[in-house]
Image (cartoon, rainbow, N blue to C red; front, side):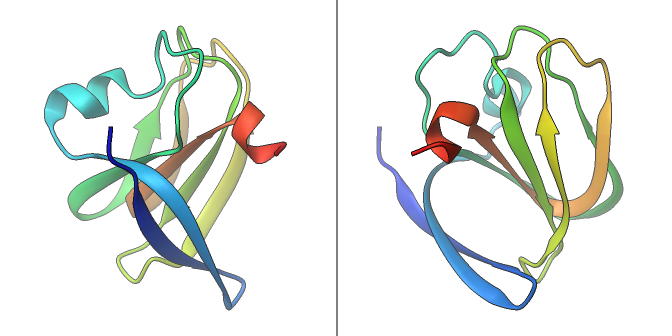
Length: 103
């Protein structure tokens, strides 16, 4: 698995993180489901969406970060397991497993 650097901006501060890109429909559908040890995942969408919804069924807790087309943070949410719907605005979505954020 190849991880790539991804740079985004939170409150004007530049942040870089190593991520696995999720571009295909299947990789977006699966996300962090059923994964115990996963790198941060970056979901890439063709255009910015006003309502980009996810769930956390079959997932360990993680941090979700929605980013606009300019890769600026629009929302950050600590997500617990088994939440049916979490929404934010963006063209990109980072899912960062809790064990990664604690390192």
